[in-house]
Length: 84
Image 1 (tube, one colour):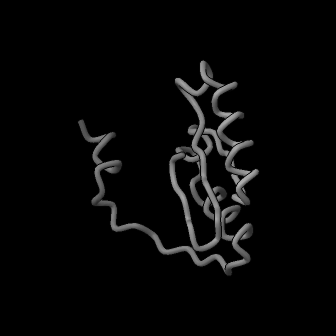
Image 2 (cartoon, helix red, strand yellow):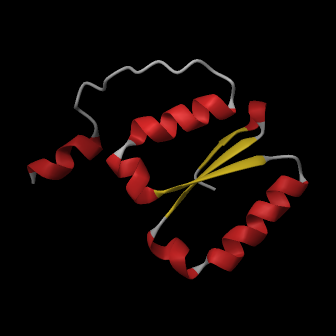
Image 3 (cartoon, helix red, strand yellow):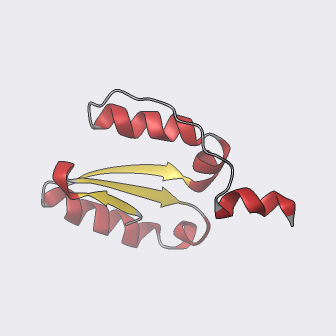
């Protein structure tokens, strides 16, 4: 589980890399969570990296929230990746 919102019983999974080797375990865990009433949204890591806004919109839609984009200031750790 990468992120969870207990208030809405929503789990967000970001798949990629090692997830390719543990698909069966991921699906078992998803089935267990869903049996407990949780909703599981899955996204590929490359989708998050390439277009995080699409992912954010999908999460907002699932939560029945209005989506509002707020650009980052460009100071987070992920922003330093290209500056090495």
